[in-house]
Image (cartoon, rainbow over all chains, first blue to last red; front, side, top):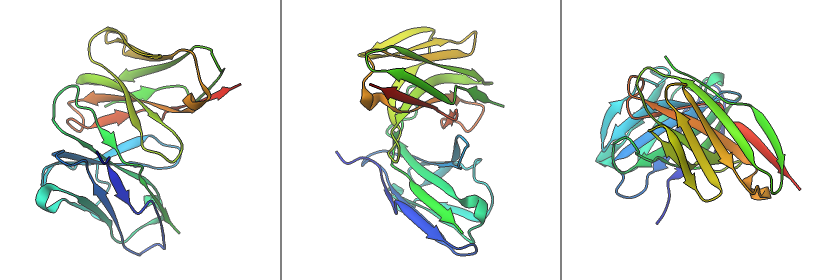
Length: 115
Length: 112
């Protein structure tokens, strides 16, 4: 069974440019989460999809970030325009059900560097 | 709000036992998770505790005390491959629903 895959693994862009990150969850997983780890800080929640619907986007930093999950399969996270403070590792995670012991499966992350 | 604390770094030798502590403060606690992350790789699930007590799984065990807001991950018979970052995370239903809230992680270095 394929795990959670993220593309690209690394992205280097200049301030003001646009970047789109992609996440393919494990097949059949309705829940999809985006997280971000800024250097020296903890992994922080960004948003949660249940199928194609945004369940919770309370962690999104600002309106420069747009996440979509059309069709309830893969998801994209677009940053437009990128700022220096957006640099970090963006993780995607998926799970099959939503209850107490729900186990999240993580991708390897996209390392984003904004110069 | 929430606050999760764990040591930044720990070192140990092969064959030894190491205990990584985690303290947390949450409003709506609904489970504590430990993840292992090797550099450049995805965090992988190790354990889950929601009730007080010890959960054992092979060389790894995890303990929870809800009244103290405290957990530890116990690693026995350490191997070089156990060198990794260990992430403590809690589910707090009053914060971000079912999403996990992470500590900064503990980097464990195992030497021969």
